[in-house]
Length: 147
Image (cartoon, rainbow, N blue to C red; front, side):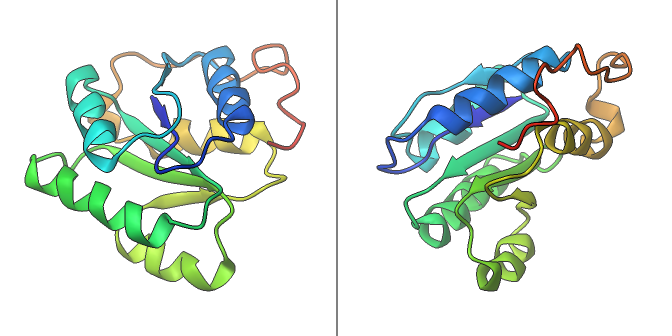
């Protein structure tokens, strides 16, 4: 699982909380840090052979950044990775975001357990190296808390 903060957005507290919750939910998580370009995100995803990418964005640049990430993934033959987004995503942009292939769009207040379960059920089955243990409350402490 790759968690990335694309663009000039420097607010990463939520991304760190989600990265930790995913890790506590039994997933290997790579957090890229802030100010990642689309190229940096795609290169990291390819190098680490991730099963999923979660981009967290608060800056409002999602309609410029997400298409570039999806284009670069396609250009590099990456078509079996779940791509998700979180942060400030206006409702009117969600259909366009989903049409470009970014699924599981999570806004502020989404319970962490919801995000963990979404990843568990939507990663392509052939990419799962091993089955994950059932999610327990102790696995993702605070998982009932919003992101």
